[in-house]
Length: 447
Ligand code: MV4
Image (cartoon, rainbow, N blue to C red):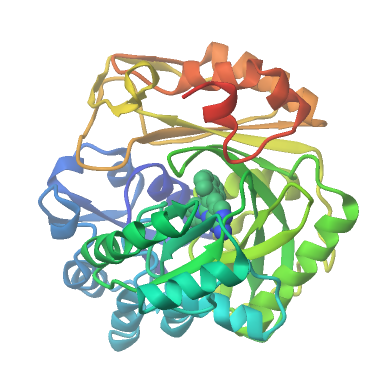
């Protein structure tokens, strides 16, 4: 087992990783930018190293500074968390060159997952259902028109190296495609450095369901259930659940089998997520692989009793997953609310400033993952996630009433947050019915 881990992140996930290290008896080294000098992840760790000024590209994205910090503090491993360098194959490579273990999959798997059109091609070759489309990049407008004619309109153009909905364009007809194709290509080039795009049939109101995979270095792979992540706004997830609601036993089982097949087909290592879109007829399609621990991992932890960060660390240190049951039992229902420093009454604009006072909910079935405290100033440099309220109930209904209770207790004074918006979602009959999809917020709440 590792003696000392460097945590290459900040905020709630840095705190979460420190907690897992502490329970495993592993020492923690934190890194921070000058904007984070008063952040709690520094206090909670054994040592901390300043890695640069506030802008991420000078600190949390600076591979050289992070590797140097790990080397001078004699760490054995680096945990990247999510965001920042978590899906940068260069960090994994630099770790290898410096005798450090990267807590995550190898660089070739990270690279394959990062190239979405390539990942789809590989999955199709392994008979995983994919959305009808170009199955690879499209070079010319004529090829785009030819594919679109074959699969039928509407179609969607996606950036091969994209994410967060950037570079995506929906085309209802030939005219749309003609005008959007060059724009999508140049937007992809400017946002992601590579202008490669691919084409798919557009699915009108998909649900987003992802399966959590755990794989050790000895070829053992297991799936510990799924998460429903359809409640999102502008490609930012707001609330996630486990298990997925309104999913037939048969579809869940089939999807899980395909998720395992997808992971096995690329010799997946460590924790990963296989993402699917599900259409209105319960047909599902692979869309992408995430090679990091995800923001929403706690809902899986709440219904399985696992500690996914400990699993990542154990696997990276060379342990097997023999202790995990072959068929994980899912107990009850969990939901996660992302409490962001954003103003829902002002187009969710980011809100920085001082938290004068805060009160965190508690009691049965409540978990809070956060780094905030009273008198803490939220920096404008990083993402707006303040806290994750994670709620467990015996049933989805109990989880919902408990969530309303917890959101009513939750007080953050000094900055605007998404707490009132979550209450609105929970008040919706459609949400309560479980009939949710990725356009729920715009259609039901008109936002
Ligand atoms: C789609 C789609 C409809 N048809 N692909 C958005 C982010 C990326 N991960 C995939 N996304 C979508 N791909 C086809 N062929 C609709 C979406 C989509 C979406 C997907 C997951 C979660 C939220 C979403 C919100 C809007 C659109």
